[in-house]
Length: 87
Image (cartoon, rainbow, N blue to C red):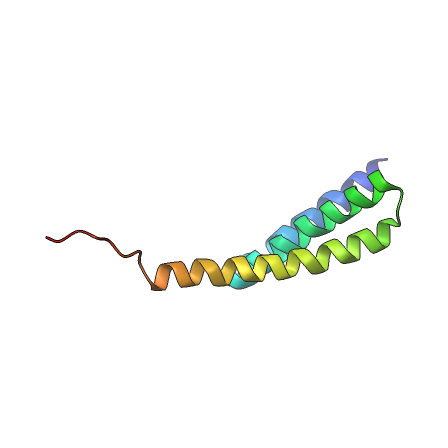
């Protein structure tokens, strides 16, 4: 039990420290993949389907979603919203 705790804690620290030098695109894409994987496993468990296929499908959809969201955010900062004011 003690060894498992040490291994899980060490892996978590290494995993989180690896994300510090990433660009916004990389962070959003990875976040999307992680969220998609979790959702895919959850849906696979609830429906009785394969957890591996749910994880793979969720990761793929989440990765694409994270990338699309990043492009949307970049486009939003490049072109500010137009106003109808006549000052």
